[in-house]
Length: 63
Image (cartoon, rainbow, N blue to C red; front, top):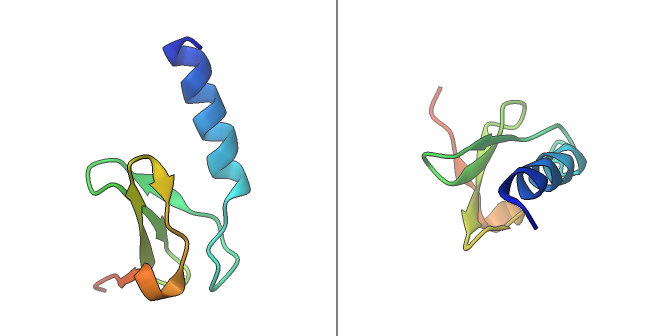
């Protein structure tokens, strides 16, 4: 699979993922390797390319 095709697939997958707490959309923070939910103010880790969407694994964001 080409890098461009993989990127399109990743964007499509991100559109399907939601915060398990608020059910709001997530934004990928590439630098921090996290999926961020502005509504619930939680950041979910991405480990080895796999999003860990467990509330117990999320960290709270500072205001």
